[in-house]
Length: 332
Image (cartoon, rainbow, N blue to C red):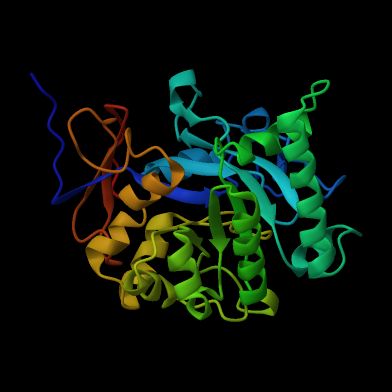
């Protein structure tokens, strides 16, 4: 007969809206650190799918806590670090588990790029370098010459095939990202956005979604205004947003995104909105809501069972179903 799994509350499989899992590994050694190439500040041609390791221990760890899909890839730190991907947390990796092998092109505005590379230096220099590359891509679109992987990736952004995911924390950097979008007409997704409360009207008016910084971020330097209350303020302003585990250059390498939702819930975000930020709203921002993010007929059977309120510290993940297969039955 049918197999019966028991739990008090069922949710869709959880979605981590931005991580470097599978490219940055557990042990923090050179052979498992592919999330940021430091040879050139602009490399949109680098593909996350070419570096993703489904056998990485962190992938299984996330899966056991109900994270069934991650948006992962090249992380912040370069002006353009490469392309991201959306993938199910299955091991071994099957072709159907890759929901989008070229999801977004990841970029970074602000001083952190200058700390990684000699160039760019100032904010105006960084924006000027981005504009120059996008103008080259515009010319490439009109008059394709010999094949150029770098310009092909940026041309895909200009055609609207991939959003530009811009990590920008300060109000100045957020404003620069919005100006670039207005000039070139690409789809923009803001990442991090510590100063989002200072720019709520501008972000809302532009219709730009936000993948909010994780709680592990240190409120220093560009992220000095990072706050656990920002999620609730974005919701009140009518801005579409999702939550992420992010990336920490030290241990831990990632967190379960359920923790991020619980923190937002504890600081003013309604429970249903907090859950949507790690399920359906994340799927909408990532462009995969036709397959995941909610429990509906016709969607992938990604389900998590809890023994209580998913956002309470005393509750546990007691079963995980991924693509219709039971992958965990241990309460954690």
